[in-house]
Image 1 (spheres, rainbow, N blue to C red):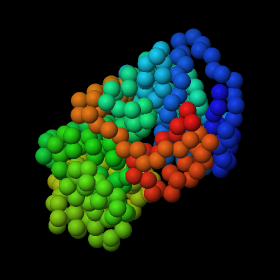
Image 2: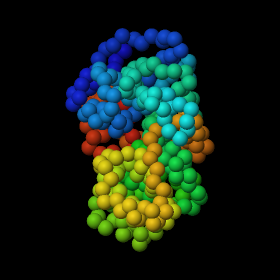
Image 3: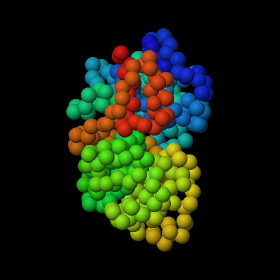
Image 4: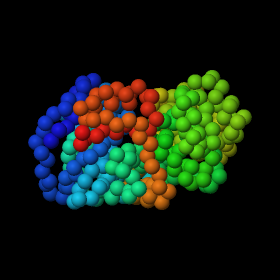
Length: 322
């Protein structure tokens, strides 16, 4: 089978012919049709991830076929019995175990879910990791109520877009941030109520004057702007952090956190129950993942570079059948 193999830090992924996988024990063998990329894949490739091992086949998001059915894979295993947080045994497909950037992948039968019927295989491959992360951050952690306001940072990324789509479906007033006016306009065309360019020095003042204070903030950036999020949070508001693409929090005024009675939650991935509920929500509201570009497996390194540049609006998907 063909696979994209990562042999070390800062190395190009190499298209390699490997032996066909064999189903063993309680595992099942999925023929991969499409695999979408996540920033996790890039962080692993540059050594910014725990538990590195090489060689490895990356790729956490898979849609393929098993037993003549189109399936997607829950990329997480070993969450454990506590719904509040994952166990020390929690793992994600694509490291340490080989992932979906190959023509076949081994997984467990209880990781398989039928592809939502309204989605193509291509669209469904964009769903698992980002959809799960967004669902837990918004629905499980923030516990939104209809007509509440929510600010979602970094629109254009997979998690942020799913959070926006879920929030719109739940009847929230959705606002977004980006460094790109084009991305802001696209989000508004999809149903967001407004957008703010965080390259503007006083963007948080524009949020307050044009949209008011936010009941919920979903953030995957962190960095120097996190303190500004506290300023635009409503009294009693909830801030959910699911990532730190811009580094550690800076400029955070702790006094504002306790004086405004804010709740700050950390969130990553999700439990098996979260995954099932996320799929149910996608089915109920007929949510369609946003796909930015599709690359053949032979162009995996171009796809990784494109993702690293951060210009995409939606998911980047690798076609394993071309």
